[in-house]
Length: 212
Image (tube, rainbow, N blue to C red; front, side, top):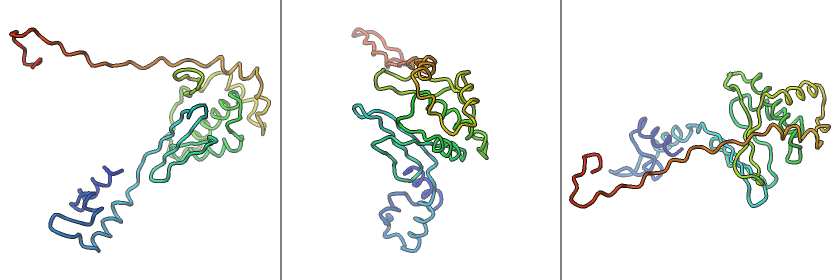
């Protein structure tokens, strides 16, 4: 955000963000009227960024949501967060209608997310929501990340059966959870790049330009 503010101040008014914050120019004070106008124009620039950070604090799950210039949202009892295009509103509405919460079973959760994503994609007026291959799963009892497929036959079947049902509580069973957990796949760790140790040539040897 600071970089966006600084660039806007420089390109439009030939002042830096630091000068705008202090109201001081190299040759003296910034005119109060000009100062107010520049601040109004520069600080009204939106921050087009959203992020959800998920993890665990000791044994408790934690979610943090940052959206634009609004305050960071968090909760000791992790809420349901959505970010993205205008279609995210429809996803949130569906998750609320389904009553998605931290006590929902794994089978319920994947169905609710499947339904919410499809609804958001259908209702998104800008068409920004693309194809989804799967969902990333974090589990404090297992190291690393896992993935669940979005458009699998199991969840498509559940979506068809529960489309007209107001509740998915019948999916809160060991059988449904076992069926869903059987589709989880462990994600392979990403490549790790390490800097090669520098080779030291014996004293007196001639070095190439690249090695120098």
